[in-house]
Image 1 (tube, rainbow, N blue to C red):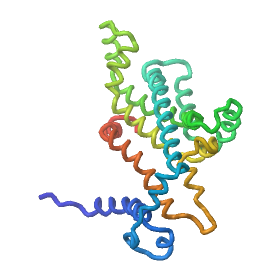
Image 2 (image 1 turned 135 degrees about the horizontal axis):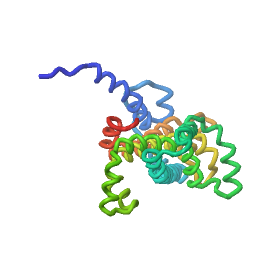
Image 3 (image 1 turned 60 degrees about the vertical axis):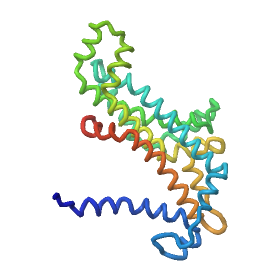
Length: 265
């Protein structure tokens, strides 16, 4: 029999401890969290979750977040696919410089662009809409998606393109029916990272929204009252924010594994 090393088990438990503690706190009252230290709730309550699912301020925040994250993922990957194909298949003047310039947008902190986006979207009446946040997040997600997809596309032999052209395939038919399935792992990885970075970004999402499109991350920062922070409510909201990411990881888990093994990740 193979011996199971204790090191991976300890490491996994160490990683899962904050998540367990967050879930544990979500079923407690704020008084219990501040008053006692326990590994499980002494006075089990689901009041925190009931408030989230019945208060429009909370559940609307989740809907807004999922809306702009979904829009951003679709836009980022859709725009990045033809751009990455151009970088992988053609050589043109300044291609390497343009590719590097795209990556510099990902390196810049979101705070640099918060004010320009705020003024621009206010002028064109896009402020406080999910589309505004989705487009703003494209600034750093499209370069990342182009970089990931270009690595996958460069690994596909150019002979595949030439064979399809000889067989009479129009470009878009070849691109959609033959080429995209070939790099499905790369698309899955790009979608995962676009979703993840858009879901956890707070500064732009909070700056570009006020009421109608306020995301859940911004709602979570406004739980202070005269009695202090509602810690149980915050823990419940934090627990629920983990679920969408877990679903995404579950559905693209095979693509992510192939992506880390084969792609530029």
